[in-house]
Image 1 (cartoon, rainbow over the protein chains, first blue to last red):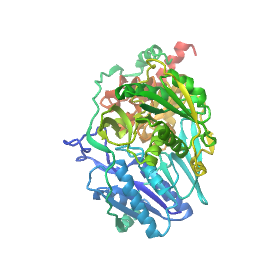
Image 2: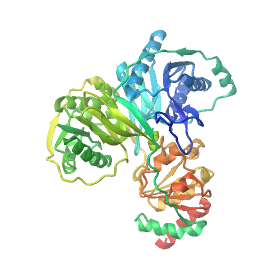
Image 3: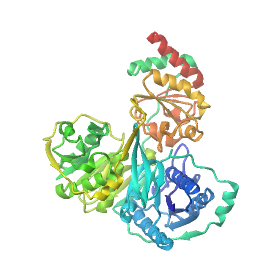
Image 4: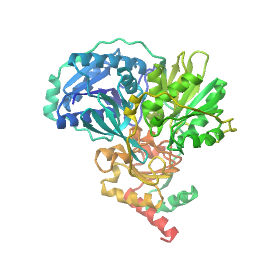
Length: 255
Length: 326
């Protein structure tokens, strides 16, 4: 099965996120970057499927040229081909991103002379969290998509996909070529091996320059939510605090 | 002139998120100067028209079709697109649950319109709308403008609005319709359901007892299980714990796990990285139990005990049993 995984480069924040002085981006001066978590799991799933059933994994990202780092990482954990759609580094709105990704996918499929049987997106990106790029791309390609997927089982001409709901799973049987929005928890992504790291340096990077027009949503500025005044009441420094805790549990009616 | 609210239900069971949707809708519709209409899709929807009326709906659109028995994102999206064509709402909204965001994305893709997900506040205008929305699961906010000739499409962040009773019931005029759905849309309809948990779930539990790396091992969670059982709650965990393989991802509280809103969140041995915090911050009260008084979770909590969780948690269990005579 030939699988395409679309990933996004995002900052890796710790306990606080700062914003640049113009308010247009996360201040990443002291942060590393990573692949958005849902997408890291989507990639792992694609690699596991091709290890089991054969086929190739292609990874596509739209982002600054530095996103090559995430593509090389993808190659180090099993991706066969990597494609970058470079931006100027500014955040593209969801409509613009979806248009450019669709064109990049169509170009790659023409070069391959066949459609990707499965395209995986993360359910939403860790940073902007627009919850829509995968759905827009699937619709432009005329392919089915289901989101919130935490289980994939490919068969001939279809994939069985499990969607997490509050009390269990909904099961879909989606004909291929198909698109799925994957959630963290579908697997535990592997770490790269030394052999993988070496191979990733040799992976051939395809640059796909694409222009796409802006959509109807425009970023004005980012800001941190007002910090709630935290007046933590310390109930104790040993297990004798249990009495005060149970008093509170009784007071709020949960005990 | 109307605001169309897409409501959710599960085979006729009203979703708690609908109360948030209608609360947000009252504010937005007043600012827009329009009435609130709602859309209910599928089997059992008609039974909920009374609740929709009580929540303030002027018109309750009920869509019926054999393909709408169970959820299918494409079939539901196409249904709402056809309703938009017939009823011409000025804006369409839902709450940003997994389904809510997916349905609005389907509508946006089909109509090629912008869609703003997980809004906190929305200010309508003659041209551009000014919106503040959630990024990074709520750690950052984004001020954004929305410009479109078509209906404005948006969701409110789940738990971003505190549900309130409706100021007054609406007229609640029921209008049933049957969308024209192409058979091919059956490709994304649920074919089976695998319900694993009975009773209280992590996202609806009134008490969540959660553990982080500080619990130390998978076995260490047994004490948390006992306390959660005693309180009729659920056990949660941090992303570190899931990555260590101590707990299943279905127990993970956080941006990429489950977002919870219990009466009290008991966070033990959890440092409180932002991706965890944003999943827990809608909790009504937070009690942190941690040996580190400077941990982010402790600093942000309402109550804290600075001690070893493996001593405090069994002591809470023992105290509850003592008071209940167990």
